[in-house]
Length: 427
Ligand code: UD1
Image (cartoon, rainbow, N blue to C red; front, side, top):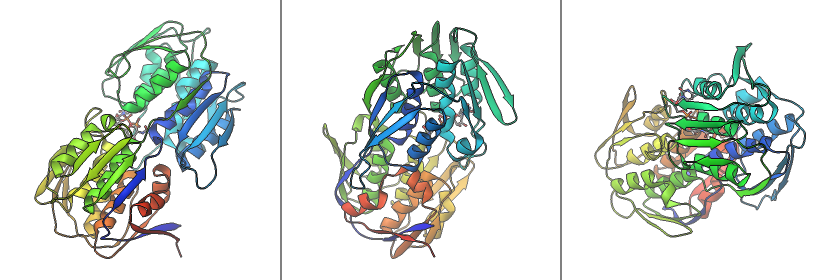
């Protein structure tokens, strides 16, 4: 297995191109199931999860063609065509590897009147149920059965009648599944307390480009008037706000200055606000965001929350930054339990962090030192890379498959701004 070796202490400076958003791409791809016409997605990141999702779509008889596969290309263009769907089952083996496969449930049900998807099973960042996905679909008139580890959803003859669902907890994935099911319903579907992450807005914008009728885009109340059919579209995936935020933390921890080319400040306000409280300055223009860390880093208190609050997907990276800030910071993780797996690894690099339930108390230390580390999820792995960039000496980050799921060409992008990073095969 590969590992990344980082020689810490290099100040980052220059421009980092920001890729298309993984989490947006993972909900835009299954939209191909909603039409028999071609769907072309531009600016798709080159990531293992995208390849996995493409494979899943092929299992359903969807043809996929990719342009921009040259190694030097950032971003790819994929055309998906679901002229004839030949299967409606997402098997355990694929869903187990990629939790986002659950996002085929809504669109497959809408198009075919039935869908069978394996239950995703355990997940490294806590128990992640799908009850809200199922309840929302039931509220729109689907019949749901659970048997042998699979969810089987059926729509009455002629399609989903429509209905209303009020989310007790904000869920990004359940909102996405419900939206993709609703667009072809016979009646009107209404969602209250829906997620309003920028990735949901991206999904809504694509659905509208395909002919869907959606009111309330960007708000927590979404009303979908079902239409008889959707058509094809060409659509550009939004920039990855979490990737951008991660590189902002990477630059800041080295006292550096980087331009995040393609990042959208309005989609990452909570992260930028947190960075400003830590003493990092930023400046946005139409094309990107410039981050500069000139003065000392200061402690701050942070709590994750659904959008527009601070993304849980930024918690680990900001924590890495706070390990070397002056003073004591208190972090609260409100979205997922068990999302502090990076803490013991950061501690091995010299960080002073104490956790109690959902709270982490980070006492800033003057320096981190390099170590061999590994993490069990994507953002936790990135937090170790960030720590390694500032640490004295060498850091080796193992289990790169997590990083490869979410960061397109991580080491290349870091090298562009002067980091000393190298990917090597493990022995
Ligand atoms: C998505 C993102 C993930 C991000 C998360 C929160 C993708 C592919 N993944 O995950 O990177 O960290 O949003 O911003 O876009 N919940 C239930 N029942 C459900 C669904 C969720 O109780 O049926 C709970 C979860 O356990 C969690 C909370 O709701 O506590 C939020 O989860 P959710 O927004 O659904 O996360 P995902 O869509 O899985």
